[in-house]
Length: 215
Image (cartoon, rainbow, N blue to C red; front, side, top):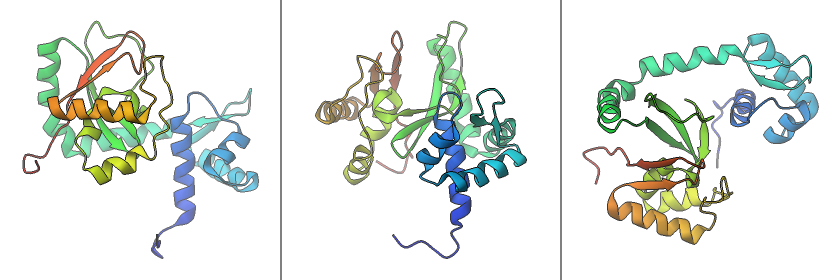
């Protein structure tokens, strides 16, 4: 793939550092961070120094590991407040939450992962470590199945080739053929289900949000 001369590689690497930290639970050592983003230790030291100075990452003074900084929190509200998606979907999300009495989420697909971008909680919500902005592998969630089942064959193959089908719980689908079958069922019935495949004790139902002009 040819990269435009307008592409700033150093910026891409810096954002990769933030994305890697966002994908991990807890703090990350300099060595693990360098390996995760495929950079040398010396280069990673410069990136972490700069990101620290800007407030986007922090370093734990006890274990000397890195984690996202508080300045990252200033980005999400601007996205939420300026996205037409949320103005359009929120009333429907609220109505669904009130009618079902259950927590309702909106998720988007990025690569082979599902990102939680909007949520309405109910009073009896189960406590989980999944928050807005959390990412989970598409094969382990109802939303992932629902979105993948709505893709074209070429788009689906591209995502499936990125999935590692890692077991998140004992009930997670870990074989590609079995997952394909689950997608066929979801496509046929118009919605997907999740039976404790992401979190034990939690079941979910999801359907894709489609553009009315696209079949």
